[in-house]
Image (cartoon, rainbow, N blue to C red; front, top):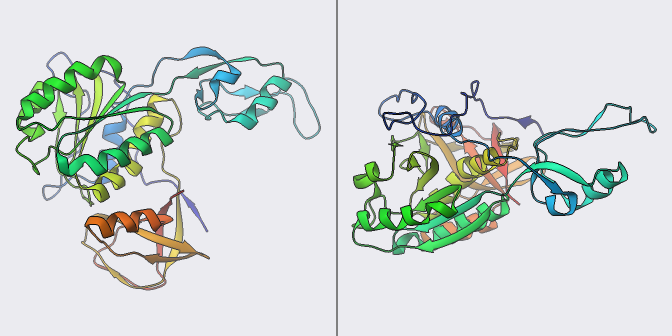
Length: 322
């Protein structure tokens, strides 16, 4: 089974704040037929997310944080040579690393903190998805906090979000993109520089990015839990990793399809799947409660791109689900 990284171009330089004219700091990729390529969009969004400041922390308190320095062997022991990299910069600290660190006499490391992520449900329809997104953010290493602002006016929702920015390194709104009377896009200028260009991904075409008060990244996700889950795995989790100074590339693997599929040309199509013995069986593209059940039971998220029909036994890329 082969290991893949996504087919990204060179990532643009990270810029943490908007420019003096209140515009996003990077030039957006050009859309084609009204849609932006997902991986170009991925680079674009990640390029506008800053890394959090590093600080010194005792090793016991560093569990769950990411190292901001590589740990090198100080002397030769067995197969380990002095100067060998034992732990790479950006590695997330886990408990079994502590014996290695303290055995080398290291009691304090330079690390980046867990980002404070605020997840806000903006409609009743978005509440199930907001729980999913908040939990996924916590599993990705964030300090996750979830709120519900169910307003008839998008302006009221924006005011409530702005009041919470002091406690957030990243804001994720769920819903408020047309399924209720409060449409965030209508008042996005009040949030900060923003971009709601449709993206060539299914589900999740309609989502957005903003710099709230020109400094705090904000990702606006749809209310549909299936779409929110896909975008959380492919976009939100890399953004959290970027804030922590960790690696951002999704770890994608491949398997062989157990059935033929037909997908929309030019659209990155994501569907729940089950992978066993290098064979991938697609769960379909269900919606509603059945769709949530399919997400729960899947052990992979198939990420498909083709010009129409994908034949049985074709090699397909997937993201493993824990």
